[in-house]
Length: 108
Image (cartoon, rainbow, N blue to C red; front, side, top):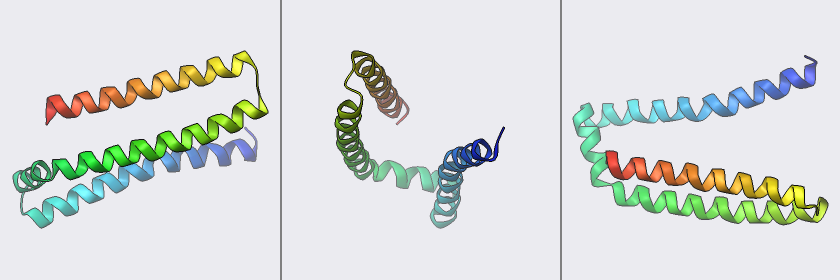
């Protein structure tokens, strides 16, 4: 593997682990501030509506960014193969978001 590949792999690992570390840190701080895991769970449940609004805004921003990027890709590569690739990515993304939200409904 050349240096470009190592650098790219390092960046991917950074972007995978950084959100995980941030989430764990937020949970540890939240548990500490709430006094217990049960207190933290109650706080999360009491503020679930705000988190739903946040997720909806995040999904909306992501969809806007996707549409912007999609137009640019199709302008650069106007073939049917590109449209199929994008469609597969869109279906996968919608299924992933739906699975996440269904899990939130069933667990929460």
